[in-house]
Image (cartoon, rainbow, N blue to C red; front, top):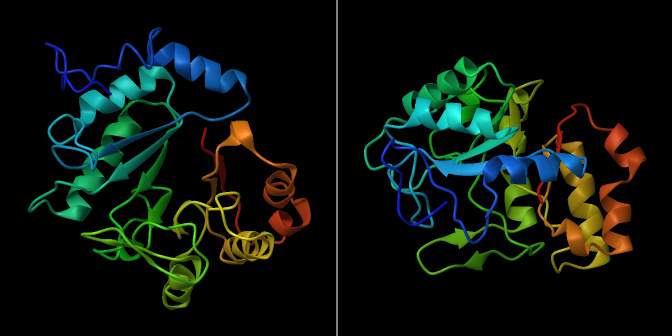
Length: 235
């Protein structure tokens, strides 16, 4: 989105340099590659990167996303001040449903407000922890916050496993396969996320994917042994 906030009508504006033909054309391009088109925004006034958030524009943004052909919305939790998490996510959920376009809704408030207790029927998946990092067993300090390793996130899942199920998945964050861990660590990471029935969102660059990474992410036997089924790829 553009740094110029919104246009005179309050609509989000695409960066003309990154998306010279507009977001609808870009969505069509992604769909033409056999992929789903996901987009990101935030429940607060600003996203974590400082771009316009959806607070106060939920229904307007939902209609715009639907017109672009969006299939997936990741909805973050930065700059939310005193917002009530459940109410904020219910508002955007209602806005998406009103568009009549099937848009998968990913709640990303980092598990701070225990979404597994209330997010069923609100979104299809909800983050259970903070952000993941491409480290198998060592967290990464980012200054004001800490990114969690694969094992740190895994250790937090058993206590909430009973809340996992069709259309209300515990989201242990995206896969870091192909982002710098060893071959054995990548395989273990992918296998454990499958065992958790976690959403399988490829977090690597699909344009520059090694055959080794591809073989892990497309292992039909491992994927088939999951008790749930939710797959999404990020371009």
